[in-house]
Structures are given as structure tokens and as C-alpha cells.
View 1 (cartoon, rainbow, N blue to C red):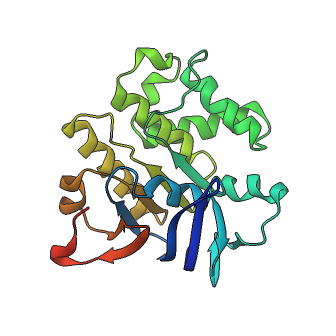
View 2: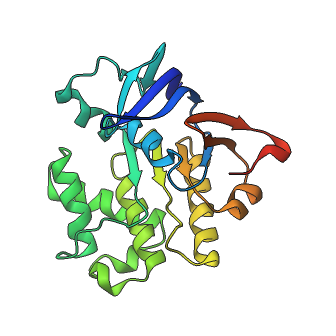
Length: 227
């Protein structure tokens, strides 16, 4: 199991955002987290990579790490095992797409230009953006920038993709293509946990659905799939 939360309480700063959280995610699963703005979706996802705090739990494990006892120096190692996708892309605006990706590889310990080149070529091909290697982020559309953000998330061959509202700034057609790409990635064994307010996406694609509401997280089934 990649994620195993049992009766977890999650804080953002001093404020408790979610209580009694139960969430399990296995290899190759697609999980949607839905809920209204401010319901705790982002806080839940941030807890997976120790950006928000688990203050108590019966069990709280992500990718083999116990988040209740993890040491600060071990958090980069946890994050290296996952790919994180943000709704605002967070690409470095002062360098090309290739240099954006190379920056991540160097920061995460990939040595040797030829090895880096091979990995960059692979992930750009995987997301259909090989032709944009030398372009600057501002030269790309929103959908293209989000594809580059996905390529960046794939660099370290993650077991888990965490995507926080990745379609929020995209039109419907581009958003649909993005979800199709994430489904291809999931089909290769990488689990995807994605927050969204787009119910059309949730209703048109298979996956577990969890709802953040009134400081709780509950699994939705059938007609109960609504924010």
C-alpha cells in the first residue's frame, strides 16, 4: 500500500483542517479528492509530502515512511519518490524547458549530462512535448505548461503522483487531454491522487472518489459523488 491513513488529524499551522481521516491508496489506483473551496483538499494532499502536519493518527504511512516519526532530513527522500503537480505549474520562468527539467535532475542527484539528457528526452516524449525542449515557459500555452509540469513530476520515476487541481486553469478540452495523460501514467502502475472541483471529470473517469466536507474525509459511492 502506498498511502495508509487511519484516523489521522491534519493541521495547517495551528488550525485543525481534517479529523479522523481514513485513506488508502495502492499501486496503479486513481483517486479523486473533491470538495468545496476551503474544505481541506489541498491540506490533505500537502500532508502526503509533509507540507501540512499530521498531529495524531492510528497509522499514517506514505511510501513506506511513517509521517508521525519522519525526521526532517528524510523528507526530501520521501518527496523524491513522488511527483507533485500544482495548478499554477511553478515552472522557472528564466530558463528553457530543458533547463527546468535539468535543474530538478541535478537537485535530486542525477549525475552525468548524457544520463540527464536521456531522462529529459524520455519524459518529454511521454507527455508529447519533445518538440518544446528549447522553448521558454512563456512561449507555451497553459495546457502545454501543465504537460511540462507532468513531465517534471515523472523525472524521478515516482510511485505516486500528487496533483492539486491540475486542470483548474485549463479549458475543458485541454483538461480532458490532461486527465487522459494521467490515466496513461496510472495504467503503467503509478498511483495518482488528484484534487479537483471539476465534477465532469470525476463523473466521466473511473477511480475512487473521496469528499472533504465539514472537516472530514469520506469515500463517495454512486449517487453520493458530489462536492
